[in-house]
Amino acid sequence: MKCCICGPVRNCAKFLQKVLENVESIGNLFEDYTILLVYDKSTDNTLDILKEYTNKNPKMKLYINRSFVSKYRTHRLAYARNLCVNYVKSQSQEYPLFIMMDFDDVNCKDLNVNVLTKYLNRTDWDALSFNTVPRYYDIWALSIYPYCFSYNHFENTPKHNYDVIQNYIEKKLKRLKPGELLRCISAFNGFAIYRTEKFMGASYDGNVRADLLPAHYLKAHENASQSKLIYYDYGHVKGKYEDCEHRAFHIQAINESNAKIMISPDVLFS
Image: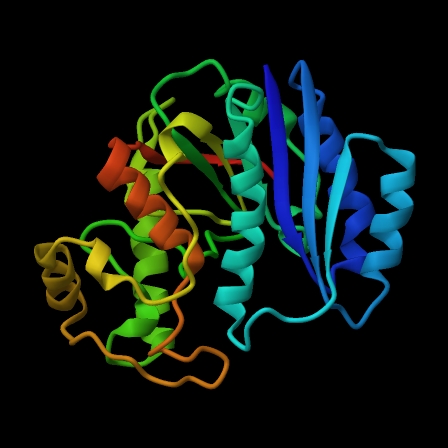
């Protein structure tokens, strides 16, 4: 079985050596693998490191984007991730699995390779992400009932919403039985593995896509947060125009393919 390991890379120079070592260890779990990275204009020597690595490892494919495709960060990330998944889809028979990951400090830790190995032959997931230490951090990408949408798009302070949902997901993960996975609407947490066939009709979208969710899911989030859906400009996030790009990708796969989006309580990078 062959796997494509993908991701956008920007200003990650100080992390790349360790992350790429981890990528190679993950790739070696498969019969063969390809690394597909999309470089975005950086202010450090990320590109030099990637070019040098490409010369050393023939499994590496590098797409170089020298200018921003959008002023919105989530739109740029969606563009980069779609370049990757479109390549995988175009060769879906060759890549039954693909991995999307970040190339920053989250995955610059020690890899617990056996954690991933034990799930590869299981059939109870179509997208699988993992827990992180010291806490589960990626609340931006997370949707889990009744917190079905983005914490940034509800009233109250973002910090309050983040903390409430972080405590909620950590309690859910701790209550799982041995070997049990947690089903959700969307989760990434810096690394996820996917069954390509279930995501053929899905694409990343950094726009606000509340239209993809049933109305009663949005109502459940309003009730749980005791607030209404808002489109606030936080400065670093333009609420009217931006949402985490992973959410639309996962929800489309659920809507079109009944994809099982799962979270493991195990920690892959520690």
